[in-house]
Every structure is written in structure tokens, then in C-alpha cells.
Amino acid sequence: MPRGASAPPANTKMPDTSVRKEAVVAKPAAQTSNMSVLAPALGWLIPGAGHLIQKRWIRGFLLMGSVVIMFVLGLLMQGRVYRPNGGDVLAILGFVGDVGAGGLYIVTRALDMGHGIVAHATADYGTKYIIVAGLLNFICVADAYHIAIGKKA
Amino acid sequence: MILTLSHFSAALLFSVFASTVFGITQRETARNQFRYGLYCFAMFMGGLIVAGWVMWVLRH
Image 1: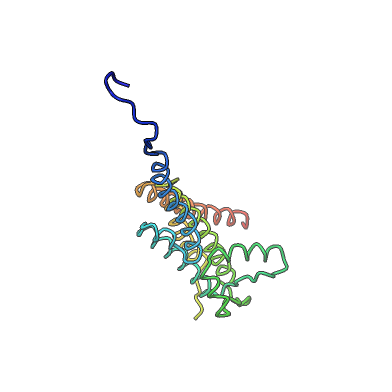
Image 2: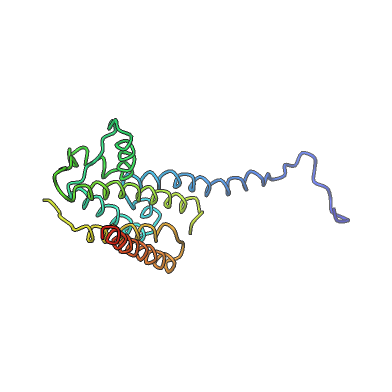
């Protein structure tokens, strides 16, 4: 304490700066936490939406276009959409791939599409298109999460 | 409506869409994303052509 300065009285309360600092730090952390849950969930449900919600417009629309067009082309080629209770191990793996497309898979099942015509020559290509569209959407979801937590610019 | 694609056109479209997703998700900057997307596309198409010739050689 400098010479001549008087000491504060014993009953004077010093401002508690630690509480204010925590409040300032906690706010962005909470936002990051919300986005790190919301972006992947939305990105799974609507392909590309995980990027769009974080204002990555061009990336989001490109990813959305790629996954949606691939899934629709697969359906138009009479590809098969796997059910959860396929029984066969390959059918279960196919289901895991398909379910990656999120909302597209739900809508397809709701409309009872994707039975696939085995006799059709390109039906097998279509099945693979649908599976890969779902798997690519898993990659998009992971990317949206990495952007949300700040791991990727 | 039934879409009928040849094996080559199906593989070409597959390469375009998969390369787009790989490019965007695996690199940071726009320039690197574009370059990596092109690289993946070239690898897909190159692999397709090489595999086709290998099968032709095995057949003959």
C-alpha cells in the first residue's frame, strides 16, 4: 500500500470480480454447447442443414444437393431401402447406411417407397446409391459438429 | 418413373457427388476443398478405368 493511503475499513465489501469473469466466459460456452448438439441433429434430419444453421451457405447447399440428389437417384433406379429388422447381417449394415440419410429415410419409409425391383438391371446401383447417400450424410454430420465446436474453421 | 443408367454414367454421377462431399468435409479452405474434390474425382474415375481394363485383360 502506498505511503499516505488509508486502509479501507474492515466492514467495506470488495467487489467480487471472479463471479463476473465466470459469467462472461460461461455464455459463449453455452452457445457452443447448444450448437454442438443442434447442428449435428439437424444435419442428420435434413442433409446440409447442420452447415446452413451455422451460416455456411455454399457448403450447406452443396452437401444438401449431393446427398439428396444421390438418394433420389437411388430411388428412381428402383433401389431397395432396408428395414430395421432385415435379419441378415448385410441387411442390418444396409439399414445402418440408409438411416444416415435421416429425414429422407423417414419420408421414404412413411410413403412406403424403396421396395426395389430385383429384375430391373440398375436396381442394385440404386440400392448402393441410397446406402452411400446415408453414409455421406454421416460425414456431413461429423463435419457440422466439428464446425460447431470450433475444431474446423 | 424408372431411371436407367449405364454402369459408366452411374459411376460418373457417384464420383461427382461423393467427391463434392469429400472435398467440403475433409479440407478447411475453399481452394483446398476444390482441389481435394477434384483429386477424389480423378481417383474415382481413374480407378474405374483401370479396374475396367484389368477385367478386360482377365477376360481375354
